[in-house]
Length: 442
Image 1: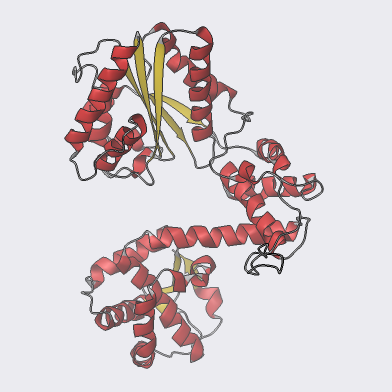
Image 2: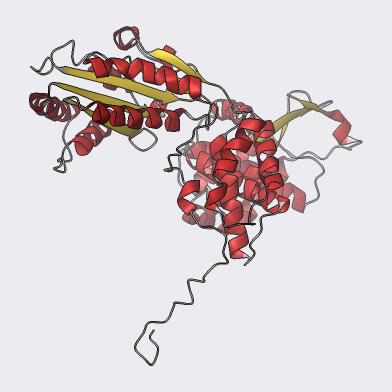
């Protein structure tokens, strides 16, 4: 639409928000802070392991280990940037490439190699090649780089490395490339840095991979409340004045330190989500309630993402628990659903969706697994033998409709009455006295 004078008018779809954020990029995952809180020791250790590059020597391969949100990625990238700056300041004929690989997106050895070629080469690489074909391109790029400089170093940073489907071959090929003379150049070093929150990742690798890479482990402890406050306070400039008070920052730091293992990323995301909440409501000051609502919303998003990633039949099992409990509540049955009812409903759902149901013994083991993962609660009740009574945790129940496809939900809805009959036919109705007092945690 345009005004009479020919100038365009704003679309009603996009409403100008109140003045809340002045530097939104400071709250995004990609933001690299200049000051990194409480990681001086880890940063220095990473730098020490790369210092040999300045002497045209070999960098030490590293394994950065710590929980989610403990600063592994920002610390590594900070050191890489400082290394590049130092080489430039020394004016030495040393060329360094750093390739950051997000393994939550780049999960196969082929896509890893394609990504490396893509980031090293000005020409977009062909798709559809095999792993060894991309490797040949990488070795040629290294050869060309080394031919133009007195020394060349390639640092490969595998972030969330445990997400690669088969990491052994990838890590072995790059950690042994120089020793195996994959290229003629002798003035080359390839450094491999891996980061993960999997504390046992190295033990999952083959012995020859661990032996060849010789990863130096650097541990990243969880942030405490004081450190989280400092981290969040450094992001305060993302907000306009008076939007975010220090007491709100303290509160956010407190709940994250107490409940989420000091996950700094989660703490920052809470502030960002709270800002979005008040902008939507045309307010310009974040309250304690906004922090709580933002945290709840983030957890719902996280649960949806997690559950969408689990196998279909596990999701159908969760749906079976949800539906059978819903039916029992409708008919005022005082007890939650039990294992037998859930497995029966699961089989019914598989028939409705024209799927082959897994064996009941296997699906019983999946109930235990879902309980261990805190998606469901399976409890025993005195007087009912080995029968387990099952409920969903609140976060999962709130988002159940987001983890099953719309077409499947429609099919189930059209046959809901049949599921009701199936559930009610399997429920026994004994006398219940103070049921809650008989519940025992597994």
